[in-house]
Length: 230
Length: 230
DNA sequence: GCACTAAGTGTAGTATTTACACTAAGCCGA
DNA sequence: TCGGCTTAGTGTAAATACTACACTTAGTGC
Image (cartoon, rainbow over all chains, first blue to last red; front, side, top):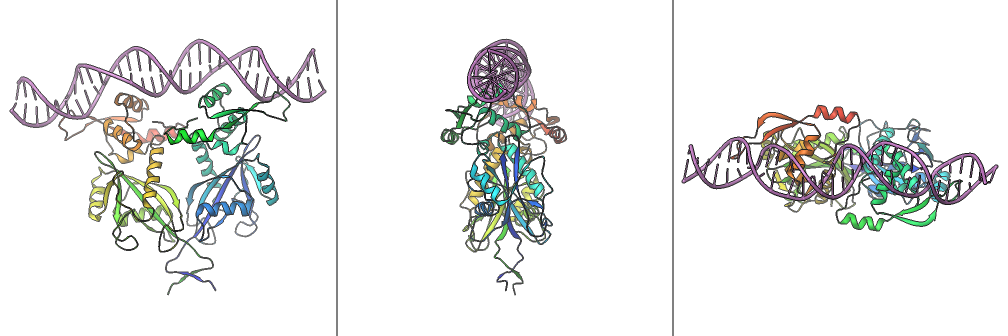
């Protein structure tokens, strides 16, 4: 009947993903509505049990695609959560991941719309299943801590972005206001942004110049010991 | 016979610990010699399987005590490793931790001596079992990244230490030389070290003043948003 | 062409970081 | 006790980075 037997009791192993997305005005988190107990109908992080033939990273990507329609995102392991009572059914240890999705990418928007998932502002989350609120808070902490020392913010923006968009990103993630001139000076002095010949469209004021992040150059410098700091 | 049966296959879940210790001259890692296959007689990280009635943190502390005699150390979760073939026996996912031990504490020294564990310089590691070399490298990266932004270096030093000891710690962890006067200026300007009325003993030159870290004050400031940077 | 909106730009003052070398203190052995 | 050895402990000047701050420019829409 249940063909898998072991000499010692084993916890179930799961992954859960906190997907961040950047709106025009907000940093958002992707949530799905549970269809089955426990916490039926409650909002929760996309995730599920790890199979024996996949790594944790693979499980996280699979669950993201299956449950939320999210593919091709920046994904990084966050932390493993193991409270004895975090799942009322049985002992489940979950390895949490966080992902950064380009909400500007229509494929992401379309796929998540089709799956009926919700994007919630970080300060506007519904009650979450399990310990998922705690996981989201941990992910936000990690994002805040990492965004200044690694070029991960760009994963939330379209490939070409204005400096104002970039500044707003940092302001939202860090939770502080930044001075426009000082921010531009600093970010441009890194010499990692390339001015494109494109400008913003669809705005009813002066259009902003668009830049792209020179990842090649960053990788080269990083290999030589360069440490980003914003 | 094997009383634990499940509907789906489950990976075994383990913890492994990278314990760092600071010597007079070196940053060391604690290793144990395996008594059973696989990798019998090879050096490995202390660790073992997680029980159903304990969290990952608890499992890590239990294994540290059982296998290495190490207790009362700073312990923090590092990363979870899940390559399909990392254990030749079967699928094992391990949650790695790193710990910072005060090698100056005679209890640590005595207990690890009694257990026959080895302390190896980071640049002088033997061949390690499983993917443990990879785990050690990851732990060193994390320590290097964290030591400048969190007051964790003190966990490697005795409660009272000289500024030279502290500087050597940073130099060993970061892998760079630091200027003595600039280091002292910066570290003292944080106003988190308290000068004690004690000095170094047992040296055949001028004895250095000993300081202690004012953890209370740090916690207070941290709660108010202060961010350490060294 | 006027009103509106956000883009884009410079400077001066302050704080931080860097580079750098000698004197002071304590121990030891002759 | 004196001389030699070893590490502790200290200041300054130049360069760099950070901060605060306000107006002009470009484009859209009425």
